[in-house]
Image (cartoon, rainbow, N blue to C red):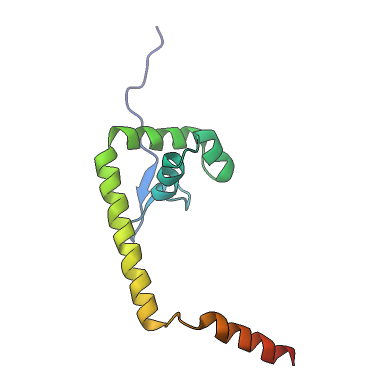
Length: 111
């Protein structure tokens, strides 16, 4: 009989900003889970993100399937944070008329 290692470490690391990333890459847990729930296979995700190892993608998907409620709570929290950042940025930099200003700037540079 081959001795099996019953536990392996999960390839997830939380950075200083509280963002969960896969292994030593910059790819976030959010990215993997959204791709998976949108129907991508682990192989398709690996093709799209070559810095990831296929085994790590399977581990992350397995973790998600075993801990859906915790991962979904994390994803909701991240979505709320993203919305807050978007609102702060829009308050600081009014997005209305940006295209018109950029087109006017481009036209003046051509002259």
